[in-house]
Image (cartoon, rainbow, N blue to C red; front, side, top):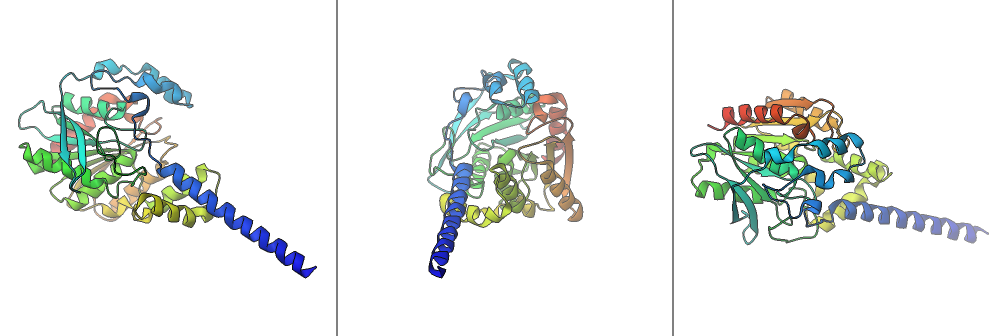
Length: 329
C-alpha cells in the first residue's frame, strides 16, 4: 500500500515537473520566436503605407477605428534612399531608409518594435513624416532579423544584441557627414530598449525618445506570463528557456538602469496601454526624478499602445520638434 502511494506521488510530481517545464518552454518560445516579415505591411513603402491595411486585426474597436479613419496619405513621403551599412557587430548588414531633406539639420534614427515589424510599419513611417515636417532628417531601420536586414537568428534578442545595429546606423550617418551631436534616437515599444542601450554605450548620443517602452525585466516578465494565465512562479523556467533560445540573458533587460545623467530623454505612453502597462512609464518617471535624469514625460490621454502618434499627430510632432531641436545642437 505504501509503495503504491509512493509511486502515485512520484507520478504526480513528475507530471507537475513536466507541465511546469513544458509551459515555461511554450511561453518563452511564443514570446521570442520571430516572424521575420512585416506582416500585412510587408510591401509598404513611405509613399504607400496605410493604417487601414491591418486595422481589422485589432480586437479593440477604439484602436480599430483609429486606424481605419487615420488619413495615412496625408503623411506619405515621396523621396528616400535605400541604404545598407554594417552593424557595429561586424558581418551583419542592416538596411535603412534615409530621408535626407535638410542640409545641416539634425537626423533621428527611428527604431521599430517587436515582430511582425520593421521600418515598413505605419509607426516608423508616421514618425518619419512627422519629423520631416518639423525640419528634421530621418533614418528608419530594420534591426537584424527583420525586413531587409540580415537574418542571424530565429529568436528575438530583446535589444540586448540589436542595439549594435543602431550604433552601426550612428556610425554610418557620421560617415555621411552628420555631426554626432546632431544624431538622435526614437524607439517605438520594444525598439526603445535597444535605443536606450545604444545611447548608454555611445555617450555622443544626446537625445533619446522612448514611446511605450518597458522599464524593468521583472515587471515585463510578470506581465507576459500573466497573458498566458500563469503565475510569476513560472518566471524562472520561462527565463531559463528564454536564455537558451535567444542567446542572451533576459534578466539583463533593465533599460531603466541604463539611463544616464548626461543625456536627454523623452518618455511617452498611452494611459490605456494594455500591451505595455502604464506602470512602466511611471517607473521611468520615478527613477528619473530620484536620480536627476534629464527627462520629459507625456502621458497621452485616452490612448492605447503606441496610439498617441495616431490620435494626436500634430501634438506628437510638435513635442518631437521641441525636444530634438533643443537637444541636438
